[in-house]
Image: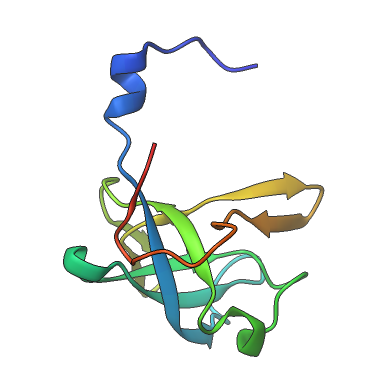
Length: 111
């Protein structure tokens, strides 16, 4: 288990729901990954790199809602600027994306 954090620490993490609107291969990544474009409603469109190629095809990801941290600083990955972090459960080399059970409005806060 990681270090204990306070509730105040947790409230600093901005978790939102977004819909994947574009998926591209990312051959420059060190590990197999996709470049994702995600619609977060009023927050706008953000990009992310995700190592989720073992369980998801590009077609399966289009239109899928995901949970993401949207208030991390941008991170340069090869020639790609990642603007958010998509959340998933890590099971060995597989990552299972976290997503709402029912469709919700893009930009919805997760708490």
